[in-house]
Length: 357
Image (cartoon, rainbow, N blue to C red; front, side, top):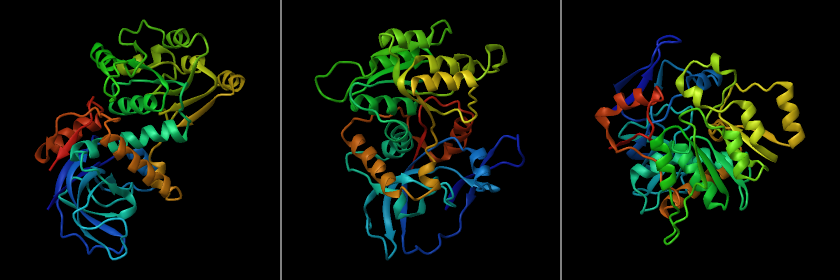
C-alpha cells in the first residue's frame, strides 16, 4: 500500500514528493476509525507553521482532507459504524497520508457525509468551509444587512466565503484578479430556484492596477465602509519594494483600513502584518478589529472540539443543499498526485485539486 509524502532536504530547497510503500496499518485503537479513502484534496503544506509548533519531520504526510467509507471502528467509537460514509480533516500532527488507500483516524476528526454529496466535493470543500466559518462566524459575526468584502473571490476559499456570507444575508463585494475571474464572479447565483440575483453585488476588477479598491467600496456603501473584510494578503510596503506581479495586485494595508466601517472587522491571512502607530490610531477611532485567519487552531487544540465538529457537519449539510458549490478542478487520478502536489505547493493552482481513488 503506497502513500505520498514530501521531503525537504534543507531550508530553502524545493520540496520533493515521493510515494513510499507503507507497512500494514497498526491495530485499530479504541477511538480510531479505519477509513477506505475515496477522495483526498491537496492543500499547500505550511512548513513554517509545522516548524514553529515542533511538528516538522523528515517525511511529511501529504493530503489531509479526505472522504471515504468506514471499514472498521475501535471498541469505544460511538459515532460511526462500518459502511458509513465520512469526511474530515486529518490533524496537523497526523502520521497518516490521506493519499493512501486506507487510513486510521480518531473519530473526533470525522463527520458523516450525506449520500447526496459526492466524494470529490466532500474532500474538496471541507478545508475552505472551515476557513470560511472561522473567518465569518468566529473572528467576525456575519449577519443580515452587513457588507462583506471578500478579496480574490474566485479562489476556492473566496468562492465558499462568498456563498456563506450571502446565505447569511450579507451584501457581498469581491475583487477579481483577471477578466476570467470577474466573469466567474458575475455568473455566481444562489442555489434557490427562481432567484437570479447575483451572489456578488459588485465585482472590482483589479487586474489592470488602475482601480482603487477603497474608493470603490466606499462608493458602494455610500461612504460608510464595509463591516467585514476577508483579505487574500496585503501589501506591506510601497510598490517598488514588492517583487512579484501577484503582490502588485494586492491592496495596501492603508486601503483596507480606509474602507473599513465603524466597528468593522478585518480578517487577514497576512501572518507578518505590521501596523504603524497611525494605522493603529485609525483602527482605534473606528473601533475596528484585526484578526488573523489560521484555520489550524481547531486542530492545534481540542478545547473547542464540539464547535469544530458542528462546523464540519454544517459544511456537509450546505453541500447537500447546494448552498456551497465549490471551485474544483477535474478529479485527478492517484498516479498524477505528485505532479499536482508540486503545482499546489507553488501556489499555481486556481481551482482546488482533488485526487479520486
